[in-house]
Image 1 (tube, rainbow, N blue to C red):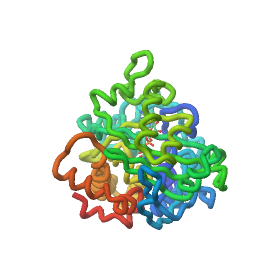
Image 2: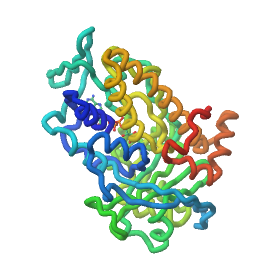
Image 3: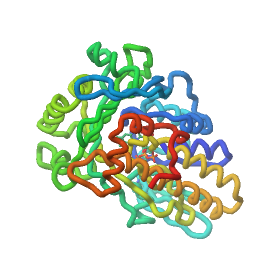
Length: 398
Ligand SMILES: Cc1cc2nc3c(=O)[nH]c(=O)nc-3n(C[C@H](O)[C@H](O)[C@H](O)COP(=O)(O)OP(=O)(O)OC[C@H]3O[C@@H](n4cnc5c(N)ncnc54)[C@H](O)[C@@H]3O)c2cc1C
């Protein structure tokens, strides 16, 4: 996603860009719901992506529902909720297809004073003035140039899934399909929001409900157990949805019945393909190394509570293109980019870490306890979860 934002914006600024993607086939069947912000919509425009009223589902409020199904707090908030595949489609459509090279796995990077060369695992290479490593949380570029900067497991996972609106009971449709809804079982957190249905349908009745359920999972015990398939194989870098064991899925469904509000439990039970993602923090100490710049999750990963992953990558791209435009010297431009985006990256990682403090087992530090108290309050949680940057005071984040 970040690579497409940067690629599109650089093309529009007159650069000659080639984009290399590891995955050979279409990426559109991946991902789930994505929260949009004003900043993301502006970035799509700058990238030349065509967005219209079909970008996603628009909602106007947030609500917190207790274990018994009562609404305990609500907040007006106007937001468009889209799907990862939808965003990807509009960005891919805008990028020149003859410069989009799929099935090319970056192996390593070589650079000197005049150029940088990307070497791919099929033996091919490409040389350019600048290389942007927008290769995600497990970035090959970062691993080579900054090997000591690794993602850090946050101690919990996010169970996720999508359910068709027409499969939900009328009670679940009434409570969940027109709002961003939260449920706060002890030590956990679940949220749901509507997204477009098949073929980007946004009409009532044909949408889908997206959910994210955060649950603690200690690394050496519970996470390992969750990531072990029925043959005993441990998928240390993430288990594919289809390989998650039936007994694990049954446990999750039983826990949903035991701990969640009835409509939230129904969503978990009716999800055809439950899957989970371990949650990580990543804070790179630098974003630039010679002619190479890191962008998006390759440099900073904020926990999903901030709902900023795609927006952050898009804003990195805006800043990079702006810096390249403003400074004739490449090194000055890249330094200006690094200075502004490191500050933001650190602040958003901290803010999202604070929001995740309430998802844990056992006791934490004094700071964690304070943050837990803060974000156990439904009003505060709803005011700060996945909101536009204008509503966050990142300068004050400790
Ligand atoms: C539970 C959860 C919920 C989330 N919810 C939201 C949300 O609501 N809103 C939001 O904005 N974000 C959300 N995110 C985060 C979002 O998915 C990412 O932050 C975002 O996609 C970052 O974009 P990126 O381009 O930096 O990295 P990625 O999207 O990961 O892209 C990296 C690309 O590089 C490719 N690649 C990797 N290695 C190589 C290589 N060696 N050679 C060639 N190609 C390579 C990959 O195939 C991939 O296509 C969520 C994340 C999680 C876990």
